[in-house]
Image (tube, rainbow over all chains, first blue to last red; front, side, top):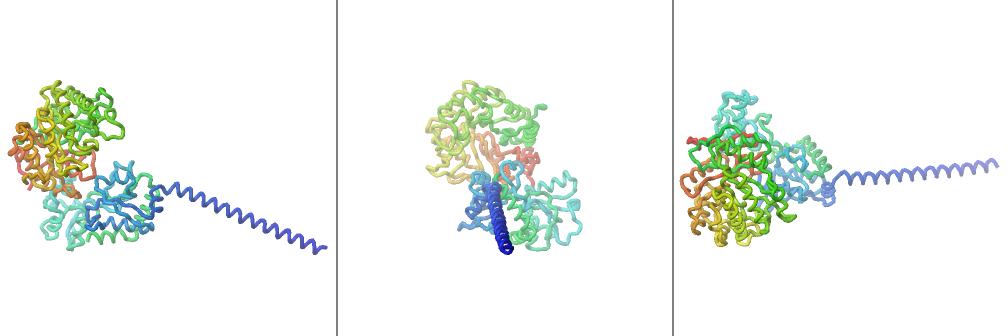
Length: 280
Length: 337
């Protein structure tokens, strides 16, 4: 009988053991279902309508005023190209969706965004601190401010103080002209301002040795420095004009995604490569 | 307010369109108008939105407009008042501030009368509405010269009852080559002719004119199929053909733009050259033109659009080169080379 009792206890033990496993697996299953439900609810609540729309449709709609090369331009066939177009395509690729470009006059960009015509504004758009209650702005991806261009062999001009007694070229009547006058009149750097009909002519005069330096927008400087050679620019910007991406105010998750990607693009050298492509 | 000033200028037709409607701080209003005077401009055109000053029927609040007008007068400037912007109580819901129905024409005329009475002896020029040949400015309705003339007549009659010395100016028309039947607007020359056909003659003392140069020099000749500064001559010819050749024109919006990203802009150097030449042209060649007000002297804050390329002074009161060259011209000097 002992052996019979032992067999009975063994069966009971096995049964209990199976029951424990059953409840353990059931509990884990319930937890997984609960976690899935919680994640789905959180995701819906936190990704926001912009990200959901992009993911649902597989398309990110980008509004731009495609009249501003090298940032954006539309050809006769309707094709878009430029720095911002490449940036939007890269963002879309990293998100696994397709970009759709919508050409909107510059004055209508914000209205188009707020009316839901697009998900992002990516259009050499300057940061505007007066609109931060109306839209979300990404961190800057490009500074279109003013730079100081000098000859490659110029060693004495290390900052704006080095402009004392020097001839500085600017395009007549532009922001660069105002900045040169600010340096002379407010910062009291005794520089000589030489005006030219265009920024390019001012930069050419530097290269030719006719003047010592030129102030111009970064795009003009990058193009010139990368072009004929013999020129460089000081790293520090004289003024800032930060280009940003704008989203509607309910796009916090999309803002995070853009910010993360811009950081990665910066680290990976993608933005630098983009500059090299479009400003050479 | 400071002591009364006098504008020193060789060209008394120099004017600018200021944008002080949304300028809150008094010192900024004062500084703006000081700079206008120091540039050598004798005239300002300023926008006085009806809806801001009569939020409820016959409840007027002139505080802000008093500031603007009194500071302008203290600087020795002549004020031309553009009046439009319908208050909510005078229009149906879901309409824009440009929508004025015929049943409220009398309300508009009443407001202009109240304005004229309040500013009696201070403001002597009022403009009845703005660009009524554009659908947008006519409340997204088809532009209607006949209806506009009825508004003009109603206003003119009422103003003259109050103050016969005030000049009532018909609205500046938007220069446009809109084809017949366009949903967006009506050709300005045609609109003006149709105003005369609707009986406008005798119901305005002068005409406001909008004369943007876009990319053309001010001396480019006028042509009905071209938009340029000299299109003003064609506007005046329409007036002359209808027996109003002796009425004065007031160019209340004009100018060139030097914004780097606008397709209708010119380089800053050309903008300066064209602007100075336009002022001189009005003085030398257009006796029928009383003044030229360039759009726009300064904005309270950056527009961050091509509109910033129209200004003479930054929101922070930094004068652009165009400001200094106009000032030099007004003093009788030469432009920057």
